[in-house]
Image (cartoon, rainbow, N blue to C red):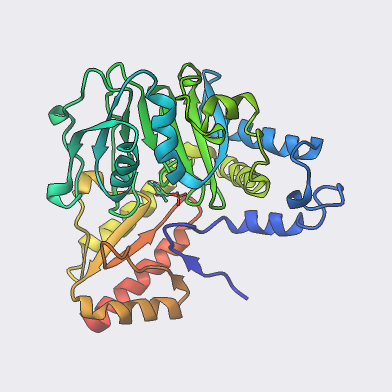
Length: 360
Ligand SMILES: *Cc1c(COP(=O)(O)O)cnc(C)c1O
């Protein structure tokens, strides 16, 4: 059996060495006589796994003691409602930037709890760019400003951190977390579903400035109350233990690669190679404003949509998997997260060159 290059947007490819380590430790984690899956979350062994993962994550992302790190469940989407429930406090409105499909989902959910003010939107241009911050209509009384630094489906990514004034800045970093250095101190809250750059799906990591804890509305479900989750070290109930463990292995792997700065350089190189190739071949196109092209998700189209299925068939035959674009966008999309090796990008480019040569 050989491993393919999996360009899926999520759940996404994991580092092979991480999967091998998980396999080797599957039946007996370090002499405990059991799998991590079978351990009590209160056991010394699991508490060590959990604390080590949090420590490594804090070190990698540069998170100070002013922030709590929570390992929650329900994926990034559950945070779309958890955030307004916890952060509105006595306020009734929140600011949102609309840059694509994930922004819109967050907005739709927030509208159930708050009066949502869209400070800027790139919808009229088909979400191919990021609205110029000088045009943003930030409101004076918003409880927070929410944005999506990397739109996974559209393939458009912020190259700056917005200024939210005195309101806390909230970011859905699901598909960009740990892909390049970020100044966490600029944020009130960061959240990320794990299945892109962290580990298995279902887990969602939340980084919240501690002064924002304790403001949840009365009707907030206990399991969605950040203060409760923080007070219990993310173990108010049984956490997603195996996902937490795997996230910890990914963090160790990232540290061994040189950390987030080194990873950012690799990611930049991978993205530049692929966009450079697309731009140099008439057969392929990417519609995104070059300044805001995502380093993680690279959508592209072929000269003729009628060739899409032949392209995908040929790719599958070479072990280049899951290149079909999101159903709402069409075309192709190559997701090249941290765990996608540079050799995978090279193999994709080589295939694209040969396909264009044959069919162009
Ligand atoms: C994948 C993704 C989500 C959804 O994550 P789930 O864990 O499936 O809820 C939300 N936002 C962004 C930016 C994503 O990439």
